[in-house]
Amino acid sequence: MQFILEGLQKGFSLLVSGDAEVYSIVGLSLLVSVLATAVSVLIGVPLGGLIAIKKFPLKKLVISLVNTGMGLPPVVVGLLAMLLLSRNGPLGFLGWLYTPAGMILAQVIIATPVITGLSLSAMQSLDREFYRQMLTLGARQWQALWVCLKEVKLSILAAVIAGFGSVISEVGAVMMVGGNIRRQTRVLTTATVLETQMGNFDTAIALGLILLSLTFLINTALTFIQQQKAGAE
Amino acid sequence: MFKRTIAGLCLAALISPALAGEAKPVKNRTIMLATTTSVRDTGLLDLLIEAFREKSGYLVKAIAVGSGQAMQLGRTGEADLLWVHSPDDEKQFVADGYGKDRTTFMHNDFVVLGPASDPAGIKGEKKAAGAFAKLAASGALFISRGDRSGTHKKELKLWEAAKAKPAADKYLEAGQGMAAVVGMAGEKEAYTLADRSTYLSLEKTSSLRIVSEGDEALLNRYSLILVNAEKFPGVNTEGAKAFFDFLLSKKTKKLVENYGREKYGRQSFFYDHKAR
Image 1 (cartoon, helix red, strand yellow):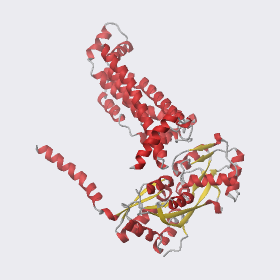
Image 2 (cartoon, rainbow over the protein chains, first blue to last red):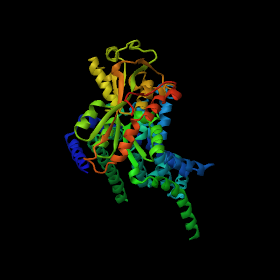
Image 3 (cartoon, chains in turn orange, yellow):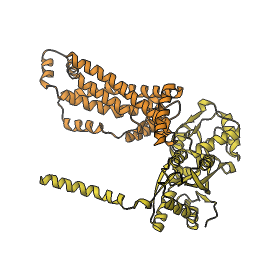
Image 4 (tube, one colour):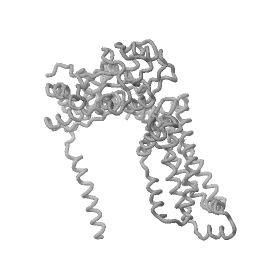
């Protein structure tokens, strides 16, 4: 019991004193997760919108594929990305294995289906007639899609929050693709695993606390934006 | 209502075998062993645990972690018995009163691995410290475990003995297990230090080759430590002692010495305790 309390204590003091290495780990975590979320939003939101409003054969199959993708096990994604990026793999020429770029790629694979799926169901909640009316009024397809997406922006923001949450907390894929290399690819989750394995429970608790507060801050910011928009309507 | 009953029965049928399997061993029949990944990864541990279960009925639950965490599990009274390879920390652990009867009973050895082309020109270097000095001087990339495991501690000692260290950008601390680090070194065409058993299990798929081996300084000594029951009343002293004695018996000696011969064509662990 004593060592848990001591761990919490040391955790807080580590947070306050601010160690350069801890800061670089936090910085990399943020950089990788924010960029991965941004790329996933750019792909996932329009894709989800398109799947929702378009009529095409096998639409139900595509939707269930997207929904399956929402539950992709990160370790499987990590393994796949690692094999793709390895020196003799099809993407080996990029030289991305054990780099932040590779970690972003893996996280994009994890977050894109989440954001696509949630955008898709958000758009499906919208009346299809709305989209058709826009087209008859002379809007181009992408303009109509844009207006529809704006209609459901609250749910789209929820999709962004979910996507970000799935990558910032992810450990399996970044461990495999990034390699947890000190000062290069070590992020909060992999650092927590390592400190636990080394028996440094206090540092592990500190890192866990930082991760929690970071996720809390970012989610609060996003929720504020979302709720402000809800209030404005 | 009927549907629900059926669903419930199906669920129960699915779950009960799993529960029954868990419930079998009586509380005191379970021994918690804290050990290192290198012992588990080779498969030797499973073999010994199974042999011990057949003989005594005890169920050994092995938690395979780095030597650092294994020792921590002893310091919190979580484990009954430790099987580790980090001599300096072990002595400290016993001196601090957490453990007793520390017995060094077997060893394997470390090997220096590098790309087949050997850009640092280490092949033929018999002394491990010499190999490490050449590594530092050549500017070749080196991947360290960086996790304060027994292997990492050994590596740090070798740099000390070599009185050299690679430049910061040529020295990566991976913070992962042995197999992952060997894989990373292969990808990056880098050098690394690994225990022979792990290397043997990866030899077929790895592009790395042994560039230095056989030095006395590369020996990897494993010890057993009983967790001090006076400090933690919850420790299963009886069970831990039984497994301790089993591991120091002639039967174990034979199992250890035969292990690896069938699988890799050579002995991977060497028993050096006078078995009782």
